[in-house]
Length: 406
Image (tube, rainbow, N blue to C red; front, top):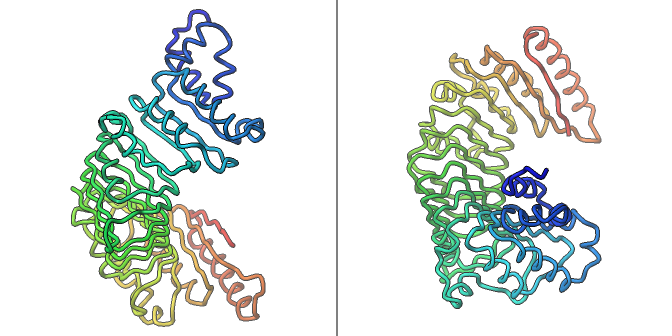
């Protein structure tokens, strides 16, 4: 231990993360204390890490966090997650942020402040340049009140930011039109949850991962240069969705609990020849006559390896062949996930048709929802489906079949 460089000890302490563990370990000797003070990169205060946190008053907890942070230099990751604390004083929070502003790259903070503070305004009052938070690469904002303009200024102040999470924000808008425009040249990953507004425009040339969840938007527009690789949409209400024409690099499209107009949606992703995973789960078609066109999927997405489909089959789908017209195979699909929300006699032939289109299939996973109180008709349908699966497994003995029921 005596021969370990102080920088290596700093890395060891950083891997501990939890503030209490770091402080205890740093008491080993003078060298470890030096590592804590000068080479610690990660520090986490979490109410689940130490039961004593629950017994401390808010003011005592603020003092403890302040004393711990102020004995370090060069923190890059700071996490303060205190579920039992209603609020911290704004003065303490500002002190923590100002002390770490030159080196901080990732910040996670989940406690309210009183009074509410505008970090950008505070920075300007203290004549701090916004470039002083230029090291920040990851930012997560939860339950924060911020104006659309200040949020964009915050992104501008972080020229190296790559990961951004916006969760249940109270967006303060400057006019009657609920519009937000964000721009970042460095942003690669954005997660947006529980946000409602008329229009959300994101300009991010290097964005690779776009994840929208539980949002209500009239218009969402992505302006980029074709770097997008992953598109996830879950329980989103949007009238006009535009991710740009440059979708050649899309590899994953995951859409769930979403109403889509299949022709328009398909046109939006049709140039994604590199697509490897397609998931349409619990989707509802805007036009009751629409179905997922497997022939088009087979032709335009030849590199698909994982396909997941779950939507309500209707009697009309039987006449349309369940969207299985054509003969082009999904040659590279090795995993097929299929599900129902309401079981019907249409499900079995639909599964058979899809499995037949995947000659190199290795795994089939069936997801189903079964009501606790089942009618005689439902029991009969389940019995017929069980018999069908037995025959299917005999025919495709090389395919592993799994079941997941709710």
